Each structure stands twice: as structure tokens, then as C-alpha cells.
Length: 112
Ligand SMILES: [Zn+2]
Image (cartoon, rainbow, N blue to C red; front, side, top):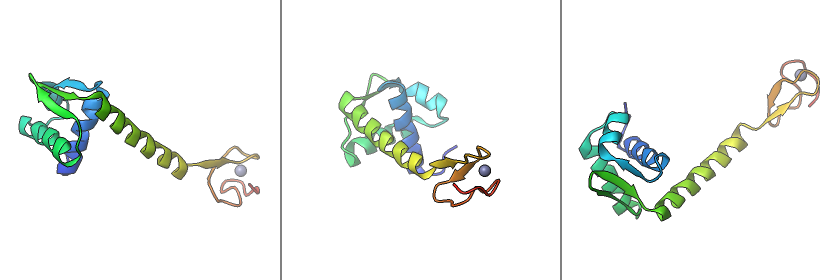
């Protein structure tokens, strides 16, 4: 189900974060259709390359609260960028949503 190593790592990290920072390795393997060695690789990579406080303990992937905050901050930043990109102007005349920067409504031609 994954395109590359990076996507797999991000999916695993996201899953741990959404689960509240602690999730069984077996659950990740099942839910993300992945392998145990890939989960271990993702955890090692995050710790060594990203400097994140993450480790495997008694069959659970554990993400420290500080790392949770770090990831959530990154996620919020990404959401803000996305909102800016998809910002729309609603036409007063026909209520059609037009892309930001459009001079006339693409549906009815009324000036925006
Ligand atoms: Zn219109």
C-alpha cells in the first residue's frame, strides 16, 4: 500500500500520533498492512535522523509527549498552508465559490 520508504515512515509516525503516542507494534502491522522490520526501521529512523523521542518498549511504539507536540506543530503548519491555497471567494449573486484572485464569477460573470 505504500509508494516508498518515506511515505511508510510518515504513515507509521502519524498512526502512533493519532493513537495518543502509544500503540502496539502488532496493531500498526495490522492496520497499515506493513511488517515488523518496517516499524522498527521507522522508529530507528525517527530517533536517529529526526532526533525524536520515540522507542519500542514491550511490543509498543512509545512517543514521548515532547515529540507529540513537535509533530502536532508540524501538522498544524501544514494545515494553515493548505487553507491558504484553497481559499475561495463566494459570489454575492449566485453563491458560486471562485478561486482567490478571480475578478469575475466563473459561473454567472458578476464582478467579485
Ligand atoms: Zn456568480
